[in-house]
Image 1 (cartoon, rainbow, N blue to C red):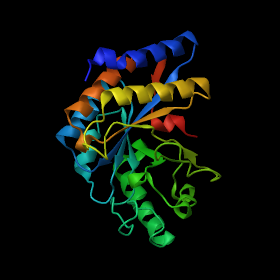
Image 2 (cartoon, rainbow, N blue to C red):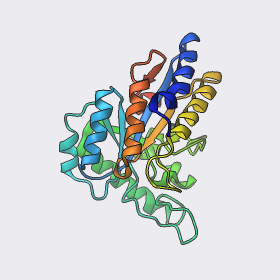
Image 3 (cartoon, rainbow, N blue to C red):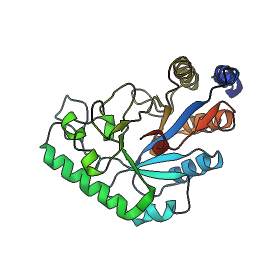
Length: 253
């Protein structure tokens, strides 16, 4: 692997292009699968806070407790999102994992989501995000239609999917850059690949509607490579004049 300066050189060059155009790229950070305080979560909250990067922390409601709430109480840059119910896979063998998929009656799924939102609302109050983050980034269309009635204003999955299309009162805010190599090492992705992917995302955004770019982390499985990439990303972008790291809820509605 080459050095970080060389790896991020194309990113800095593209951001300089944004600056010359008088544009500002909007980035946002999402992290999945929080339940209780861990050393890894403390590290993520610390490095994002030091860089003034707002964090959307996706919490699994079923087993979370006051311990996590108390840990996050002073972290004003962190907002909490409902991450399904219990992160249970209800898909049969051979299908992609889903908790909010079509494998159970819609009313059962909706009832669990209502319980989940109520629990996190009681724990976090106005620090609860209006965004639902489905486990494994998958959700049945039949469930999506009920989300506004449950108090959700947005949904976040991955890539170019648009589950909220044509659903009144529901916005879509996806992530695009997952720093974990799920099909390989299950640790941090190759930094050169990540940097090049980020450049492509920035180029497409600069040439189009300046859509926000979502960075996806999973603190519980970060290895040193994942941590190093995230920290370097913050160093390069957090104070660049052509970058605005924004809170997820500021990007919906």
